[in-house]
Length: 441
Picture 1: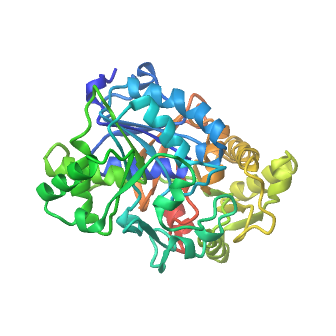
Picture 2: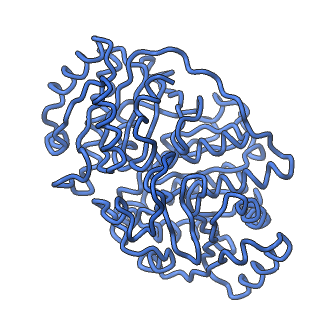
Picture 3: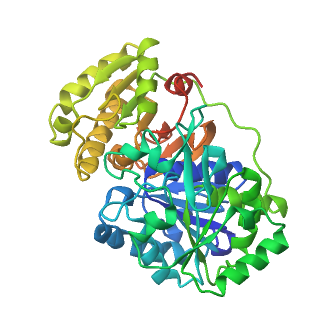
């Protein structure tokens, strides 16, 4: 069994796509990590010797605040009991949230009461993903692992029109202030750029004002090491530091620990075994995903349009399974999608659970009947429910694909699901040929 003192970090991701994002950057840093779908107990860690970080692929991004608190309080208490010096609430690098769904403010309120840390570091910038925070304002590239333009968040072609949590404000302090009454201070880009000793003095000066939350700017990847050093100095196993943000937290701590020679970053990866055709199940409304669907369809993928509303009602599931299985048995890669770009009639937030569960049931049948051994779920709001319905208990990284969306190996009590190659892709992830790259890697 892994001893408490072996763990460097534990995290709870607000959806599955964001959770595999953190899994990738921890694994790349040389930190053996396992991502669970339920909060692990020490007993659940025993089959995974040598792990240094644990994650939970949660689903709070799609929940209202009271339901979030019911989910998060026991999860945070359990993660604290594992003894890692850092516990991170992992959110999307586009800060998807609102006062009514996926409230990051409510997560901070709950985490603060559980951990009692002197302040909550908030780091959303993740330059490797095209996410840059400058003077508190978040900018995001259109697409991750692509060459899309960078937009201020409230003018982002996709995030400003998100069907559940549209971004109307790019200043994260103003955005977050609608979700929590806690005070928010900014450690701006000019302070981040200072030499480490001077940056530490500036942070100590800022903390004399006793802010509840400190938002750290980040423009360049090279600046993350300074941030990692700053926040790591406030963490211990006896008093874990609770932080909130994107995988920039993992990048920052990993860079700091590598600089101290505590880790050896991973540079070579195993080659995945040859597999049967790829099945893509997409609940994403992103224009990035829409372009990927169009490209895959033009290159020979079987294309199956899904009726999201009907699937959420439990209809058309069996007929959809028959179509998908016929493609798989013919040896054809297949993509089944609920939307080709922004949905004309978006599902209500609770529809994410119903639709995601239906997609997971379809995936389970594809594995059992179509012998599928490589599955991709596209869409953050549905993927957490789909993976649970498929029967996945945990995943570990096999190899990188696009930043934030690695190819993973599934672990499950179901022998048909155990060992599946799975990829969980957020709506903004990947270049136009992404599905083909996953199929042929």
